[in-house]
Length: 388
Image 1 (cartoon, helix red, strand yellow):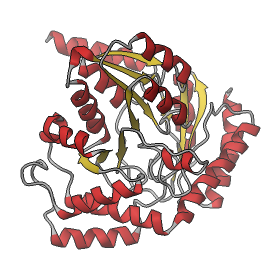
Image 2 (cartoon, one colour):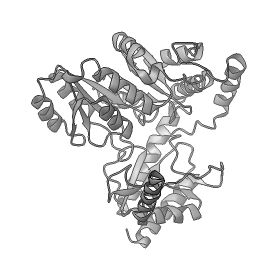
Image 3 (cartoon, one colour):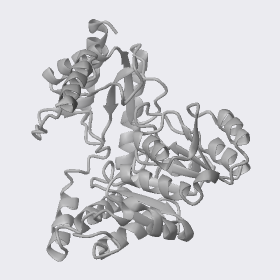
């Protein structure tokens, strides 16, 4: 019984500190303005994608029913992998994982496992939990570099230059701060120190860059061509599906297929999930105005919030944090917005550091002008009223 008593005490402690989390049913309420979804392009309800999904369901099994190496590898998977290779800037090969978390865990553990005692990993201090957990589980030597600080990264890599295998990891768009990684400097520093780069482009895919191609597309628009050694991304955000992808050269992907345990020992995503993501990519390519709408709407919202005196950190994307600080106050504001028909979730520790609770505003291209006006009217008035 001791373990149950300890668990009960821990839950009470979590509640007292304002960190308690619980599940709430999504009732698909169209009356709610949803600012917490990662459906950045509003494609999750797209009729064209739903029609494509029905066709795939009629032609393929509902489940892959096996790992990709056994039975669970179908033509929709192959078509999606090929499409992602071209969409993300010409990678040689792609594989799919059941989730972004598993993809990061699988890539980091496999690459560091080549020679664990000779591997050193440096990663941005604001990296997603899946990156942090991947590094910790790898048991490789590691250090965090200051957020987006390539000079600090350079010092760290030089300090650990004796390690034969050096890996640098960053996100493209940071999921809780909404800023874009300084990829040109990070990649250059990595190359200068003989380190390979892993980019998690989950929140950038379909959202930034003139073509929605992500972080590298964003920089190529400004004349800087970049290609991280490994790119990880998700199908469950702008691409309206579920699962994740990993892009690299033939050698590294071949190695992951043979050594990445989350890939080898997981059931593959369903054929219909792959087909949905493929159709979403086709829409993004054929309707660039969706991406442009998201970017312009996000910019306008950021300007209004900044001018009203709210702290949105260094956000320059569709992810806009509104810093509150106190966890309990952030939760109270979330409830107030729900009562006003706005779903705007408070993000608290341990997702973000203690004392940096925030509202995480996720802009999506499906919002109407009236939705945006209503949200901004409430944001600029209500938060100050509560004492921000």
